[in-house]
Length: 518
Image (cartoon, rainbow, N blue to C red; front, side, top):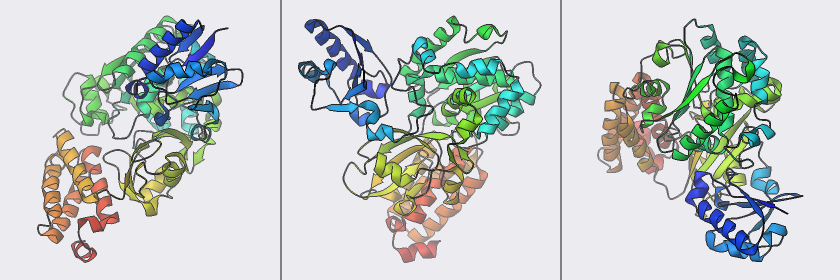
């Protein structure tokens, strides 16, 4: 009897030795005369268990991990292919609490299937949404997405259906779908996991978007540091074209949608939508002034839908199961789920997909297990390097766009970076200004010059040089950057700076000094 064994091909697993573990499993099986089928699946997102080896049984998949190359022989000695016990046996993978407590809607296939197998994708609800969309009028598809409550998952949280409706209503000889996969925020990896571990989901979502707004061309703008994502996407696009799910006459419908991958330019600012468009067009990645909006004059001057990976990959599920199904998850105006990424000083880093409404405390402790150092978690930065630092007093804030805005924070891309009580928040605030100075495209003065002056002011504050006046100057400078910058690069840089000042004043000097400065 053939035994099916799963070893991830996700780049996190590869970095931890998954290829070596997989090769050792094949060698040992051959030497022992055991007939196996080795499947290179995606990661389940429990990174502390990688490489995670799974064995298919009648009861379900049994997990073992983390398994390094030198431990493989011991696995076979323990008879793991026939249910034998082993010190690193985890039981049924689906029953691991970290996984079981999630609501996996978008990531339901991730870690289950071979990412580049179209047959696997079709066997797990793949292309059901596209088949339904083909039978619908474009306006009806847009309405379904609107009714679902889906909002942009890149940070701005703009309703996806409204953006699509604008592009659908625009008259133009050519329209485009542009996927922003330039995932540059610290502590984020959900886009990468979709592209590496379930690329057909993104491809299907973009194809449906094309049908919805009458666009025939699409681009996926992938950051240059993601070679595995680029390779898997290109392989999946070729398979979808060959099977009639992409290209001319999609599934015999007479509709056309072509898709290609563009390798990003390696600049953080190209994550801003208009800078991304410039880069796709072969120009230097610099922010465009708005208006005109990209929905009306975007890529090559034509109406363009711009969404990020998580937004577009939610669309197949919405079309497959209906807007009401998706809308039933979440809270307030934040509907559906968000793949949240746990990083920094945490015991259990990885991906957690939960409905909106879960609190920071639940994520940090129920899933993250508290700090890896064993010390109290003092702060968590949500939403990348330009996100606010949230203190322990705000850990009960639910993940909801409006709830986060009410405490001067942002959900962003759903990345969390945790810090224990040894962190120096003044130095973290300085890092935000330094990051902006390094990554600014230079087009507008508040961002280009403001960030440079910000680093200088922060250095004086840290050195206690005329600290009260310097803190007052820093606040004024942040106000200028927020109100005067051309894009989010400059007007969000003050978020981490001001949050550090407001929530952790002791790191900037004594309370009396700060009160006078404010």
